[in-house]
Image (cartoon, rainbow, N blue to C red):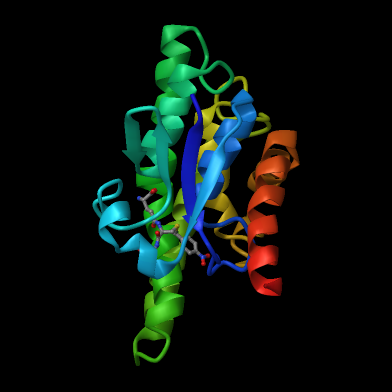
Length: 216
Ligand code: GTB
């Protein structure tokens, strides 16, 4: 059955692979599943046809036969459950990999998103510098804890898993902030994720969309 996902017609990230369709593309590449992409404008994302798939009018979505999903975390989890390659067979190792998926999305990502919101929307506020510094300290605390846990290992728990896919995707949002560079093992971890052939294929595919939109 054909898998169709949705993505930005023209991503505001400038093709840097930070929009969340990238996580779904990467997962599909890891498990070797071909997929189609339906590109959406911001306007189309808020129209009834898309709202029927995604209650919040966002990307990405995932359609396969009569199954329609939204939320990149749930979509990647679904892909990992249906296809080999992203979750270990051993039940306990599988539970731990799922734990890392949740840790990436609910413990690591929120302060990173707060930083982006501050930089995007709160820059003109009198308290901006103070806010930024508080948020960055929160991020450092999490990075330091994660760095301590990862140590010298390649991946968070044995083989590469959907937990690493989410964690690397979340940490990539800090690229260019300087924060990641304070933790060399995390920088190397992210670089290992980016070097995976599946990541590269996914990245190139989303970049091709942005390049075509920019030259059209
Ligand atoms: N929790 C949902 C999920 O994980 O799927 C969040 C989905 C989401 O935030 N989608 C965003 C969206 O559709 C795109 S990815 N936004 C349009 C809207 O809400 O109207 C988030 C994103 C957007 C832009 C950048 N960027 O420019 O760097 C990075 C990430």
